[in-house]
Length: 372
Image (cartoon, rainbow, N blue to C red; front, side, top):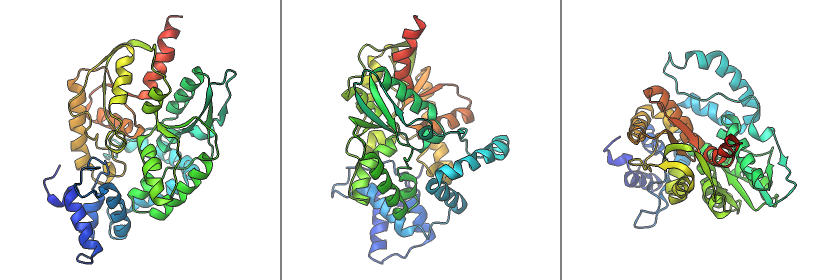
């Protein structure tokens, strides 16, 4: 990490204050200071004067986007991909198979899971249920749609097993978080507006997100950038407890630990719920890891543009996971899963990595099925 004051929350806020009062001009060095923020929200709510520091960072990036040149090609590619996801991803999949997969180790490229041939939101629209308990919509998010569709299918199975009808919107778009992180406020606002149009049309008891970043952006940032939100958006963990999904769960015996995604713990304040869920499942032994709420080093674009810092942070996380001697590390964020998979491959530390929905599906279906 770094002890440089200008790389901390207070230092960055001071720099942006100087920028906004014309005491500093936009420049490359200043832009790098602001763009190196992980946007993890650990500083949220700690400012004695009540400054919303994460929001200040987003606004600062919007002011400095023309001055930030680092990773220019990757930023342009990501911007194009996010705003044209359904058209770009099939092309990216071909590129990944032909060029990226064979050479990513040789050239030290960042690990990415395989892009799927059919995104989750294009596979199903509505799952009906004869004994209808209620209706739930799923906001899958980009990682689930294009890298981990299995998580969406498992969530659908869990909901169906409890009698819920499940709705998946074919027209779902990115929540806009990557665009905001690049300072592209207008593009993020446009996507937010389209998502609001889609999801506020559906009558649902809840809309579940499998990605804390999506939940955080929709719940807390949409009101700031477009003046509205999806009122019943919920993280999976809070949904499971609110809708009483954790009674009488049993899994194959094993030891698990839990990694807190930053946007879930710092951003949404959801810390105890995942632990309560894991501790309620018969057959699982839960072991708390040291510094469970510290970042894994993913932080979206940060892990690509500030590789050394991301690797340092990530290596500490993997070491803390390993010290628990757990069989499995559970988390609630597809981005964290991607990072932990990359770190596991890099360090050759073998551990199962699961999203909470995988654990719940195992507990509902796995042991029962194995007992016949």
